Amino acid sequence: MQFSLGEILGSVGVALLLLAFLMNLLKKWGQDSLLYILINTIGSGLACSSSVLIHFFPFIILEGIWMLVSLIALAKYFKHRN
Image (cartoon, rainbow, N blue to C red; front, side):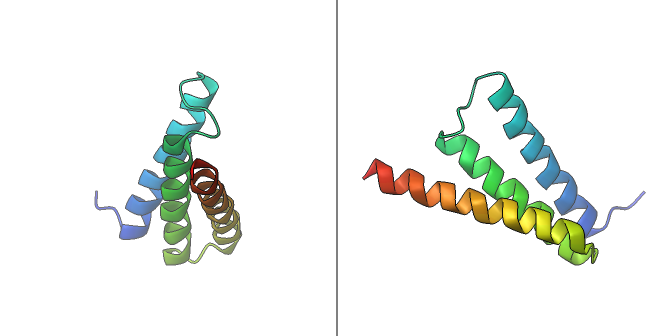
């Protein structure tokens, strides 16, 4: 079985999002930790890219907004760190 680029990107992206969710539930990564924010940003970016490749508009919006919110959290993280 061969997977398309969209399927690979989407699978990795969703796996990263689920990892961040799980680690947050287990209280291993706080919502304000750099690792949590980075994993969410990368995961949502990959999932959004996948949705673009497969032309699935609802998830382009969902994952695009998720990535935007994660990027805002990342900017806030570095702003408060300085």
